[in-house]
Image (cartoon, rainbow, N blue to C red):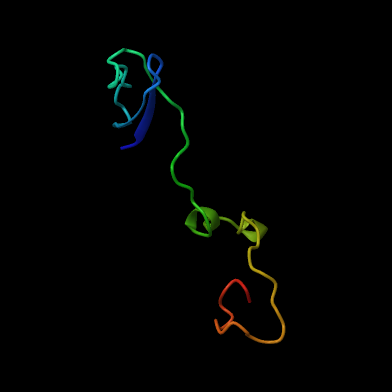
Length: 90
């Protein structure tokens, strides 16, 4: 169930409510009991980052990585960090 944000036009109180998708919007403010509660439009609280199925599945050619190449260029002269060359710094 999503969390919806509301704000009262009468007193300015902000309220969050866990509601079903098909539930009617709340209208009565829990702080002042006025019927001035309005649903706010807000962004989702998470972001998908990095590589994963949503970025790479069903893509071909140069569209495989939409974020671009993030690896640092290879350094010559061996491994100085003791990480085996598997980290982003090598």
